[in-house]
Amino acid sequence: MKELRERHEKEIIEFQESCPHSEISDWMPYMWAPGHYSHDVRICIRCEKLSRWKVDMTYDQILNEYITFLWRAFQYDMEVFSQPWIYWTFLIPALMYLGFFMFKWAIITVPFWMPVVIILKSIEGIFRKSKWF
Ligand SMILES: [Zn+2]
Image (cartoon, rainbow, N blue to C red; front, side):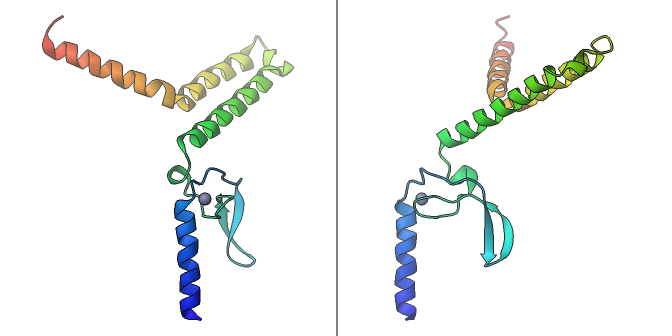
């Protein structure tokens, strides 16, 4: 019986290792024992392997999640700007939210502008060291 179970587990591991994990489920509750909720996990729909986020997700899936997040954040902000009360009292609430809006978007778009800043800084550093200017 022990041998049978070991062979079975080995087959599951081999199947999971050969799976590309291309279809990941939505967040679902993880039970370490029936009825004992631990935390939310995502699993591969095909082989049921637990997704370790960044590790098992493909680049496309991460990008897709990120774009969805940005789109939801944008829709939320547009909803705030479409509220009539935000334009009361000399546009003060609107201007305050605009300040928060720009700060928030500077942070959540870091993956876009951070590489550009790093590249520009290093180019600037090369020019400065070489005394061409
Ligand atoms: Zn899989």
